[in-house]
Structure formats: structure tokens, C-alpha cells
Amino acid sequence: MANVTVIGAQWGDEGKGKIVDWLASRADAVVRFQGGHNAGHTLVVGEQVYKLSLLPSGIVTGTLSIIGNGVVLDPWHLKSEVEKLRGQGVEINSENFAIADNCPLILPVHRELDGLREAAAGAGKIGTTGRGIGPAYEDKVGRRAIRVCDLAHLDAMEPQLDRLCAHHDALRAGFGQPPIDREALLNELREIAPFVLQFAQPVWRRLNKVKKAGARILFEGAQGVLLDVDHGTYPFVTSSNTVSGTAASGSGLGPSATGFVLGIVKAYTTRVGSGPFPTELEDETGQKLGERGHEFGTVTGRKRRCGWFDAVLTRQSCAISGVTGIALTKLDVLDGFERVRICTGYRLRGKVLDYYPSHAADQEAVEPIYEEMDGWMGTTAGARSWADLPAQAIKYIQRVQELIETPVALVSTSPEREDTILVR
Ligand code: 2SA
Ligand code: MG
Image (cartoon, rainbow, N blue to C red; front, side, top):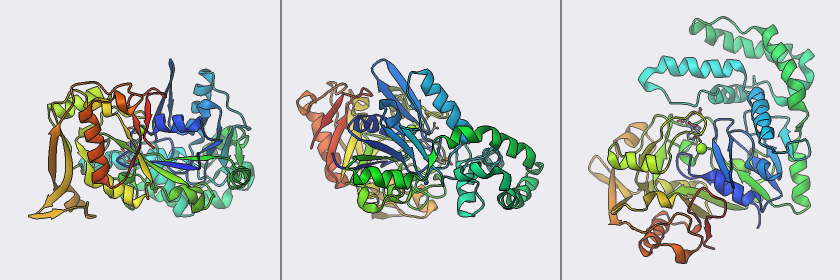
């Protein structure tokens, strides 16, 4: 296996966790390159279920796991996630885990601001995970973030704190909140610093070193392309670039390292949070998909919205992210549907579109054009070879592949690691 970059090609929750886990057992290093603890990756290994939201999935297999500079890091969450996994018997130490020392921190003020803004937005809210992701990225690009490396210099923090407070105190006043308590913040940082610093280093060096030594590197994306801050359903997006290109900038390895780009695609569509969703089903069928697919957020427990497979959106995501091949997941959720539908185009004010427009009002207004096919009565759950699949399910996969103009590389047929069909 060469290097692989795994990204979600829809709105997240495509089943990346399982695929990444499956690939991690064949990799020498696993890297998270964007997002924060808003991700929710569920890994099922035998009897054990691991729920990760910040740590790279490789941690479970003992593979070198790295949090790259493109991630925003909540140090308190980090500690609790590490402790929880250690409680499940997972070994985590400075040999198998590293954090980029230039990673910006998510602070309590970011989480508070996230919540205040969402509450104030009412019906117009984004539906964030409430974890302070957006405000932390704002501070990063606004050049006032406190970063992991700052934790080793807490006695010389005045300039950083001045910049941070100048910005946030004004914002907080607007919400009727008191200014940041600098002493309290410094104390909290002092307390958590040793825990974070034991893993901190310039990870670009470590990565370049293992790369030169021939390591196979797995880049683990979080969320999905349709939540990308540039290419997604703006403003109903997350605050990072979720496309494959970020694997390079978010880790400190150039684009030549990203290798095979594996887009994870769910056999139907889901979305959690607000924003447009052309194929959404607000009826019994949507309900059935949600129940059969256990569609609840890993991080927040929120119910996910469900709908038919949207080939237009997925084709667009695959193009934008340069997807080499896809892993099709949760096919078994469609088992037993008499008829299944695939969106092949949109109608927008009398015109037919073969792409998803950029403007929010257009994204909301498009009507899906469907193609309908027979479903399959047999079961695909647990299939481990092409021959185990009902003929009609194979037809569905082939049609998906044709419409998204990207080959299917893997089919995943249950959350279990081994229930995977390798197509090529
Ligand atoms: P944020 O918190 O600023 O990143 O939220 C902005 C939007 O991004 C969406 N988002 C996600 N969508 C799907 N899955 C995500 N991870 C968790 C999961 C989510 C959960 O895997 O289940 O547990 O609810 C994720 N993270 C962010 C979010 O819904 C907003 O639409
Ligand atoms: Mg998820």
C-alpha cells in the first residue's frame, strides 16, 4: 500500500472510522490534518467499540498516530479522550502519539462563543457541534491563537493574551459576558500544559523522517467535502478545509505525499446540522434509513437527516478532492427496499443542472431529478466478496460508480473490520 488520504465525500459520517481503522492496520503512521474534536469516528474491533473524536484512528491499533498542525486542539478534551481510551486498554505514549507543536488551541472562550452565537442565531443557526471549532479557527487566521508550543512559555504570554483579550473581550461584551479572566485562563493552561507537552513536537520533521524511511502514511480526514469552508454548502459548513489537499498543508508533508485519495461515500445521504440537502426525505423512508443506519451523531448524539443517494453532489466532491477511488459504505442499510432512487441532476427555476450551484439560495431551491431502480431483497450485510452480493445490489454499485465518474475501490458491508470487499 502506498500513502492513502481518506476523506468524506458527503456531509461527514460516511463511515470513515471503520475504513481508516481497516487501512491503519496496514499503515505505519496515521495523521489527522484538519478539524478538531467535532469529528466522530466509531471503530468496532471484535467486542470492543471505540469512539474517537480527536485522536487519529491508528491509536487503537498502536500505529504511530499524529495530530497535525491543521487540527485545532482542545487540550482538556485531549486528556479525557486519552484517559478514556487507556481505560479501554489502549496504549498511548510519546512513542506512538505526537501532536504538532504549531497546532492552535481551542480554549474555553471558543466553546462559549460558539454556544452564544448559535443561541443568538435562532432559526438561522449553523447547528455546530458546540465545541468551539469555528472560533478557534478564526483566531488562528486572525493571528491571535494560543498554540501548543506556547504552553512551554506560559510565563511570557502577555503579548498573546493581549491580542486574544482585545478581540474577545469586545465580542463578549456584545453578548453581555464579562471579559476573559486572564489569571484563571493562565492557571488552567499551566495545569494542562505538561500533559500536552509530553506529546508535542514539530511533527513535520517526524513525518518527513518516517516518509524517507519508506513508511506508509495514512491521512485521516474528518467531516466531509460538502462541509468544506470553501467548497461546501456555505455558510452551513465547518471552519476547516476538509478536501484532500489539506492533508499536505495540515501535516507538513507536501502534496506529493498524499497518495491514493480514497473518498468515503455512504450508499445514501445524511447530514447533521442545518443547511440545504436536496435529497432529504422527511417521510417514512427517511425515518427507515435513519433507524436502519443508526444515524445519530457520535459526538453530540443528534439525529441525522437522511435521504437518497445524490450522485451530483458526490461527483462534485470527488472531482474537487481528486478522489482516486471510493469506499462505498452502509450498503446493507438499503437491503430490503423494493425500489431505490439516485439523484442524477437538479432542476433550478426551469433549468436542468448537472452540478451543485454555489449560492446558498440556489442550493436551497434545487429540486432533485431521480432515477429509480429495483432494490434487492437479499442481504448484503457482512458480505466479504462480490459473489456474496445480490445481483441488483451489484447493479446499484455499478450505477453509482458510473454516475460519480469515479471507481469503487472498496465496499463496506457492516461496521466490522473484516466485512469489506476489496474491488481493486
Ligand atoms: P462545527 O462544530 O463548527 O464543525 O459545525 C459546523 C457544521 O459541521 C458539521 N459537522 C459535522 N457533521 C457530521 N459529522 C460530524 N462529526 C460528528 C459525528 C457530529 C456529531 O461524526 O457524528 O456528533 O453531531 C461533524 N462535525 C461538524 C456540523 O453539524 C455543522 O453543520
Ligand atoms: Mg462522524
